[in-house]
Image 1: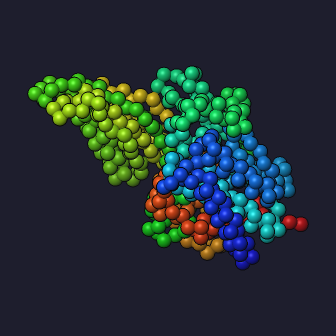
Image 2 (image 1 turned 90 degrees about the vertical axis):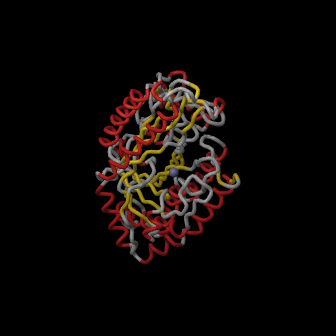
Amino acid sequence: MSHALTELVAAQAALAQRLLDRLAEIGADPPGITREAFGPGENAAHALIAETGEALGLERRVDAAANLSLRWPGRDPAAPPILIGSHLDSVVQGGNFDGAAGVVAGLAAIAALQAAGIRPRCDIEVLALRCEEAVWFGLGLIGSRGLLARLPPGALEPGALEPGALELRHARSGATLAECIAACGGDPDRLRQGVPLRDPARLGAYLELHIEQAPQLVEAEAPVGLCLANPGNVRHPQIRITGEEAHTGLPHRFRRDAALAGAELALALEGLWVQEEAAGRPMAVTIGRFHTQAERHSLTMVSGRFELSLDLRAYDPAHLEALEGRLAEILAGVAARRAVGIDPGPRSAASPGMMDPAILEALAAAAARAGLTAPRLNSPGSHDANNFAAAGVPTGMLLIRNRNGSHNPAEAMETADLMAATELLTEWLAERAGDAAA
Ligand SMILES: [Zn+2]
């Protein structure tokens, strides 16, 4: 990176800090931050980012999924645009940086390029994608799914749901997704057509900056990392095991114990995980909910009902599909051995996101020019980038060092690390779309 560009990026630290401070005020919900998707928090954050973009001369648009786009027009209107996206919603009482950091970095990078007198060849757009967090609708990545026509069937209106589909209603307002999108300036009728809002074949690249949700970069003492892939997932929020309630006097051979079936299922899934990891196939199993029926609890009772949730994730689409097959076998095996019924309940899925190798190498070269050590690593979390990658858009991701994980008030990103990632992004943009203005 030229000395001048390094300094021009550093000069944007004040802009980044001001935006992060304002976003923290908008979401203040002690002890954490809540920016409710399609609610007051996310809307206020969108308004702040839109105003800031307009002050930089960017063109503001809201698409049919209510995503915000801020476009810096390039010299060649026919050249495929570069999109820099992330989200502004948060979980309930989470941290300030999950999502927001990427949108702030996009604006700071454009401000630095403008200060350098660069006018890009192609359009550069900053996207604030709606409702990335799954807490609001029980389904995440909604803005990017809507943009790329990847919403599951029936997602807009729960009345149209197929059996086994998720009940998609806003966790606070109870509104349907169509109602939420319309209230935020989107157009659900356009989404019902099932046609992408932007033709993926005409998008040059999608780049996302996001805080890391694990301590790998803290461990590596590196401010920024190059993401290799994001996991996709298969989720069953409500698996129900039905056995038979009985008294403690019932001998083992007669029991149909739902609690022990739940335990066997959990350990079988962990066994699968350990086996796959040992074979070099990274994945994860998360059981966030795991319980008998509290109202039936008794010291001497064999449980007749058991419930759990399951999030199964992997980095490779074929691997995730194979794992889903293994899950079905495990469920059938436990049901047969324990003489219980297991209803997997509703299912949702998100595609894994493999990052584009050419973009990965270009980002590595940009890191070398900027004098940054940027290790290559898998992301622990799924992101909007997954939908762009799955739609065939060349996709890249930078992970920013972050202490204490995410989705909690202790989430901690240093602005200096955000600026290091922004420097890498700016260097990549200058190389890819640059040329000093004539
Ligand atoms: Zn996020």
